[in-house]
Length: 619
Image (cartoon, rainbow, N blue to C red; front, side, top):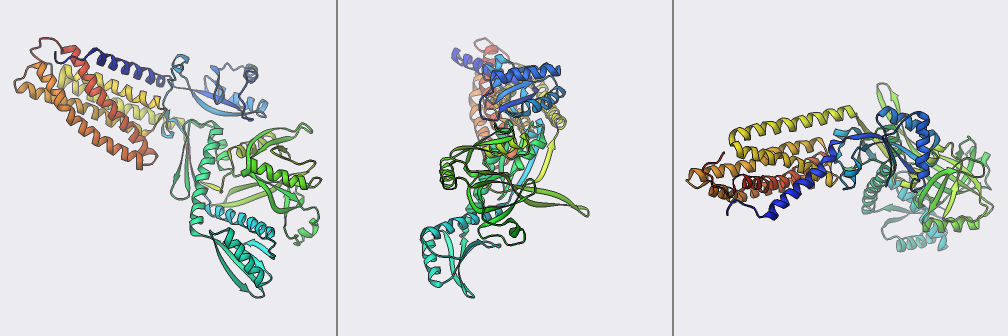
């Protein structure tokens, strides 16, 4: 008999609708203000920590909604933002030495839904509120650091091969100059560097009585260094965002040297800015114990040394050669020095860094090693009516310690001002140092109220469009229109379910894609229903008209949707954030509408009219 589905097709439709409803349901429960508590030592938060948190909250008279041990740490949910902020202030004082405590918003999904891994979809910055940063990477500084590394490498190469030279130094306008006494030494150095570093551009020349080799980076290497600096910074920023516990952040490149960072749901924007913009790293060097500090202060700094300031303001001579930098650090955790109770950072090195540290400290037992803290700061000052940003590089010695035994893979550093600084430094070292300084050139904060307004307006636009379509279809196509309306409602449920299952991010342009999908989903039914009307006008029976209407309209609907799907994929592939959000919901909407508008409505029509003697259709 025509117009009847086999049982398995009806069962398939019921299963799809049920699964869609299940995974769309978590979006009705909203979010709770929460604290995310994670260990600073990369260990799981224990039950003991849960007990400590509960005790502290009891002292404050705060009854949390829930306390859950999850993969990212302990999540404590509160009834309101006021309790959340009070708990944050208290726990930061009592537990911050061993734990990172971050403000967050946690989904209020019931446990029975979470057992099915049913979670709400993420909301973008324009809907949820949060912070938007546009950062500019100082790629010139990356080139400068690359040239500075070549200074050390070339100096070491000449020494190893016993080629005599006077100086190896970086030129202020770019490149490295190597100075020799004689042309013979110059040619020996030229041949050696040409053999070992084929990628460098070399030029030998005589300036007065001295002979020089001018070393410059090739254009390809400069281009790759700039590109790598931006890409490495994206990776580092992503690691730092993970430390902040932000769900579904957007971190992407914009242009040649800019990075966009969007952190939906972040409430502690000052902390986010501090962590993302910081460029703190460490350098381990040997102290110059033979030089005279007073002579250095008078301008006579010994060759191979530099004058640094300690945190107490006193000056100290440090050798220029670097043992290791923060790049060699694989893990860092803040803690307390057991000897004197001062803040400390416990360092773990990679294999190469551990070997180098061991070799240097083994040869220099009894001597002093300095830990140099380096941070690039951007200060804003007012000049007339304009705000001017000035970059300043801060380099200071935070620790001077005698090497009592060879150091290897694990050791600790002290000399930090407080536990907060120790935690921040450990976080930055753990996430990785930025390969080049970044400046936050644009900062926008989207408040939760503005985000809620966007949600309300977007929801209102969907509802208005949906209701108008429902009225039109019900009036114009009668019973068939009501069936189309039912399919349209389930289509919206399916879109939300798919977004939730894949944990995609819904943005304001995404809502526009959903509104467009509402019209497109009905368009398929309009084609089918008009085809059925045409068959009835041609004198066909109602059952044959239904069959022909669906069979003959499917190819037209498929062609129209496939062309739209191709356009949506192009938008997703070539577009940026907002355009991608529109393309995602449009693509999902096209696929779900084809299912609901063709299979879904056909199943309901079959149940209403299939297998019956029908003389007239309500269409």
